[in-house]
Length: 298
Image: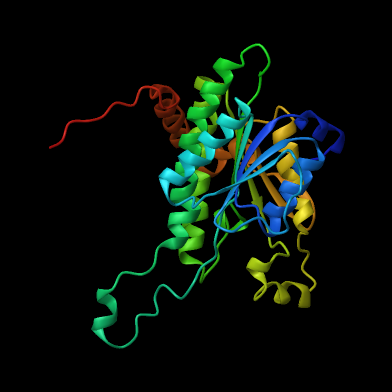
């Protein structure tokens, strides 16, 4: 892993930039909104909860948004674009934690007939896909309409340490956050190459927010470092305010690390040179996804 040095003086690059963020009334998202406004950005926040604390700032707009509902996501971006005639950055921070135990089906066969709730997947993964799709549409419009003044745009996804680690018990949450990493991997080169839109992802380790109130005590009792939300937000603003692209930033114990590029460097070692060559050849043949076509139904 490579340690990343955040330079707060770059945050000034966000002055007057329009940032759409989903999930920002509490926890990491609320700190992100505060810091973005402090940097001079124009923030349009989407959430299912009204902003608390209330952000009393002329550069702040709240739009009720359920990220799992596609029409809500469209409305969020349409509102932002209508207000500001541009969108520079989009931060997909909405997320909910596991509720219930996926495999606790009871003794009776009757219980298995009812499907489990899938809100975690709907918000964390389906919502991220909706968000990215709509963001690209409006960023494409923004870059074209403001060609003389807008030279940069980016999407920031938020995964988790559960997006690459093993977390027994967080079954749907882990699946959703691994899915966000899949979305990152499949879009980072494609969108930068075709749309000039940077894509980055943040993976926070245990962070002291209300989402993890029931489990963070075990970390603290064992002296394991945790994050303050501001540590994670520093990674957010670093990704938005620099030319960083295709980067996965892991935030742990207040420190920030780039964790993907080293994996790429050693892929031939753990996969084997022949298999790695086949993988690279296949990816080259598909043209970073631009050669995909819909197959015929059987």
